[in-house]
Image 1 (cartoon, rainbow, N blue to C red):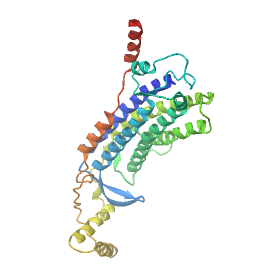
Image 2 (image 1 turned 90 degrees about the vertical axis):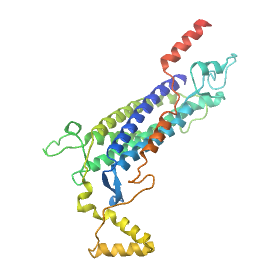
Image 3 (image 1 turned 180 degrees about the vertical axis):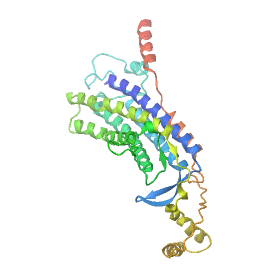
Image 4 (image 1 turned 180 degrees about the horizontal axis):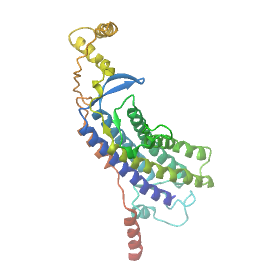
Length: 336
């Protein structure tokens, strides 16, 4: 159980680092393309103006939230079970606080029964953290696949990050994003897989727990690879700066027209009907000058605030290098 926790501490550290670096990159992209507008969608239909500042920044903040969630996972995982023996304590007069300090655990599983019950729970907690990050990556991948389509042309990737068709020479397929999407969708089920193995077990040790390594260890490797590949893709993505010049998107400004009428004193429902009638009769002429000023809008995407949130989430972990711990143990016993 201690080995599992030490292993997971190191792997979670890798996940946190790669997730933070990806979020940081997305924030840089959000700043670079802050003023570039694109259509937002609801029900897969063109809705209201959005921007790449909002889009990139939104995913950076989502990853910051995932890291905040993972902090809670890490705090539960980072507890010392040593001294609980088979789950009922030991007749040896051990000082369980000594190993907790030497191994730099954040706390201790006080009850020996709970220390043993944390088999399976530790893997499940970690699985939920993996699933949270994977869900964000899968959605980002899906957005990017959609935005690369010829019917959208919002973004593009260099040829070396696309794959040609087996029979159609014009195709540039986003296979890397599709594979990230598929792998990450699968990773969202890790916690469920763990529950499927451990769900009907009573307290105490069972050999079933050994099967969890077959689930969790490959999942950690897979998530790290997906984070690396998404970083490579987002680093090299190119943005179309003239998307909204297409008349396809002229109606995304309809809300602006409604709001102008409301601010002039017309009740919202009446203003809504007036603009709808203008559209139906072909009289609608959008001003194309959306005015958004509140935090989290295209006029004020809150990138500085997201950066602070990311720094807090990323910096909220207390990691100790395994080599440092090993040296500490060696010197402790030599000196003793």
